Length: 447
Image (cartoon, rainbow, N blue to C red):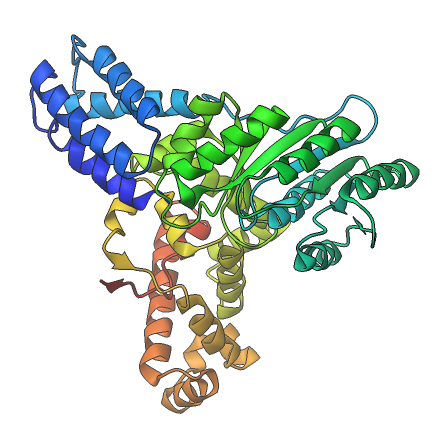
């Protein structure tokens, strides 16, 4: 996420690191590079210009106090301005005071609208809501089937109707929702390859009839400034209530994330960070700013872990660690929990300093799969008692898992090292959590 922008900003800030104080000369020099980095990231020209002016105005004349270094002070100023640029605080989805909450989702074809609808339904269902998905994209045949498939995977109803207009489908869906107690109606509207009058008239007609609580514009974060221009066109006709950025799990240039709030004056409410239905996160401006500046995002990492960890299971694991009874069975369970949290590179990027450290390292995401195959090729007794793993058994395990004996040996060595580390930590009264397991089985390869 934002790797290229982060690298360029880091290079720009090197001009101030090592300086004794902030001066007009060194600040101007550094901010010239920052401005270039922002424009390369496809940030709106006006937004980039104002950002630089605001940072410069606040930095000049500032006294560097105590042990604080000029470079650190500049990072703090840039962090605060980035947060301000992206909206200051998290903005939640508005829930209607009475009747069903109606969420109308708009955007261009290929931006991820249909996938977002299912992700939002998943999030709301976990919060105790009763969502209804409505298939109003009648022009792309796969859209209705895609929504039905996604709905079925979450055991959620999808309202659709053949030979009917989007307006007819939406109005009948509202009747259905009231009849069957569905308290959130998520309407997936049609997208086009470009903004056109027919498309705008259709979504405007739906807005007038539905009077939605939320009108969310979904845009592909990788398209940069083009996404902002498209959002402006939709906002002029629909008066959007919020924006959703998709595909933020790639090396997004950052232009859309940094520009869209300032240009539209509308909050970014959600970000898509993967293809799975649980890969949707609320947009936290301060956390995104921290990640752009290479400061990590520990809070999100902890939240992801908490979503996967059951309190009772955590207590059982802690007891096993204290008694030195941690086995390959427990190891496998912890590995699977980490896999559910998302991409390993993204998780490592949330740890302060790791994003920079891993920049030239290729993390092998398939390593978890190989480790799982090795452990599953062990017998139940071997998993519980690794001391049984002699040469012939290791050869059998490597053949069964499609790996080499060296791979098996390496995993067993890592497991034994981890057990030693855990014994040391538990003696001091500290019990490691999943973070201690994240590097196990991983052999990063230099690019």
